[in-house]
Length: 289
Image: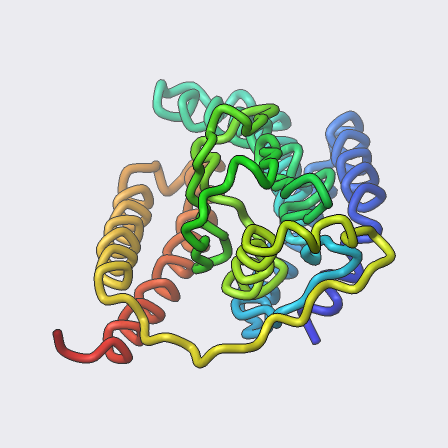
């Protein structure tokens, strides 16, 4: 249910984004810290609901008009993020220590990094000419001819492809890894199977259109969790959890920035803790080597 609501709300993501940013600007301009504070609190509550919903962590296999469903999560995060910047703006006098200025600068820069994702979401679009991946800070256009015969893999919200002709891949904006295509609105194994199907059946690509129905890929039994991947996630999540705790200790408890960082660190620690729990479950499912 939460996933369906997040997808339905994504149809109005741009209105939510522009309205939220406008309210923050008006609140800051009037000097009312309660306005950005209230917006940040509402966005945080909605994000916690989304992250806590099983349907968001394990979306069902689906395509809509050859696009993976987009959710409003990045828009909510962006509005809440901008509200924090608004609070910082109203209390610039508190940011006198060098570490405070560093955190403030990173807060502003990180907002700009995923601005495209707030505006149009993140996911895949399959076309007759290839696959388009809308990522957090840019997009990747992959012609079918660029993909190798080796089947792509889908795990943890993304499809990982292998390129035979990487020179054909077109990238706009900034993206760290163009072989990783996010598809958080659907089961990544399903998205990988759809891409693999059209790599192996080029004669079927001409039938792809927004009005056509996506192929029904036979469901396969869920493979056991990969032990190496689970161990990697476990170690990384544990490190992030430790850094979040260290960040709380590093920031002054009595400053406004310290209060806000405590909230952010708490959210990061919660997310890292959930990843640790998931990784432990995957390790148990993978069994002994």
